[in-house]
Image 1 (tube, rainbow, N blue to C red):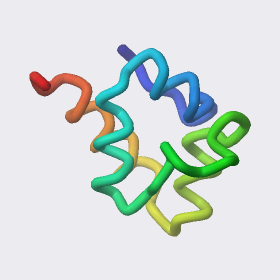
Image 2 (spheres, one colour):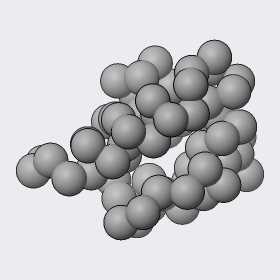
Image 3 (cartoon, rainbow, N blue to C red):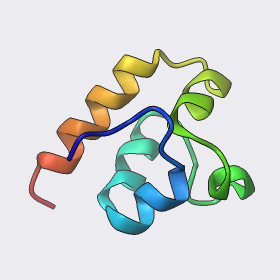
Length: 67
């Protein structure tokens, strides 16, 4: 799966539940955030002060790993 910066967090987590654990590992409590239904990965990275490329790399690695 190719992750895109403009993916909505709620859609990503719905389709790939392991993404929630990866996001939490990056200090992002996206599963409990009300903005997750409208916020993109790009926006979330910006709001949390994370480099977008680092977030996408972490998610890519986490989604490839066995649960």
